[in-house]
Length: 245
Image 1 (cartoon, helix red, strand yellow):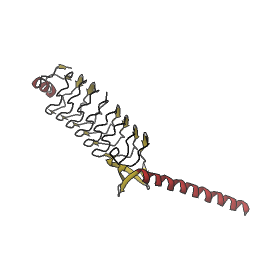
Image 2 (cartoon, rainbow, N blue to C red):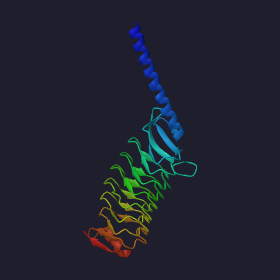
Image 3 (cartoon, rainbow, N blue to C red):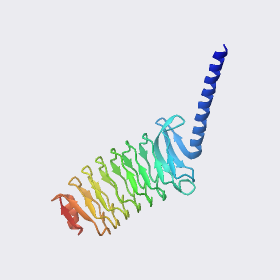
Image 4 (cartoon, rainbow, N blue to C red):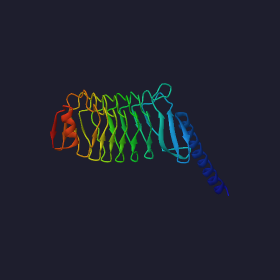
């Protein structure tokens, strides 16, 4: 009987220990984020801490999957001033308007698979952002997504991408070259405006529309494109140097 009692006590203590860890962990999450819970899961609306350089956004809060970021991580009173790296869980599907805007210390970011849209201004004015890994599921980069990301040197666009929005890469002053995948149909107005070190942009025949001033004040740029493509016509009309593939 004593042996059974000891075993039961060990099991009870283990359960209490695990339960305590769970409660503490969930409490810490509630002290770190503001969030909403619905049938689909959890939407994080604000990051609250100020003292972290790296965070791992949780997969679950209160037992529900985190699937959406709709608030802001780096605004006055919202925390995030020192964030250099943010690791997102694979379950994230939606990155909302201005989510990481003005995260001025942010240096790198991996966008998980499953995300199809980077919404308007989601990384705008991340002035120290150097590296971004985009998912193979991404279809749309909306307006001003990477506007004024001054240190962004290179970015690999996925083959799933269809639209590059207005001013999406405006004032990315360190960007030197970019390859537009054959899936892209539209490049918005001012998309690469004032990218002063941009030298080569490869644009496929699939692109059917390039907005006004897409390369304005990007004085070093040369467009590489197939003969008789829309991009060739655009280059001629806007006095942009080009060469055929």
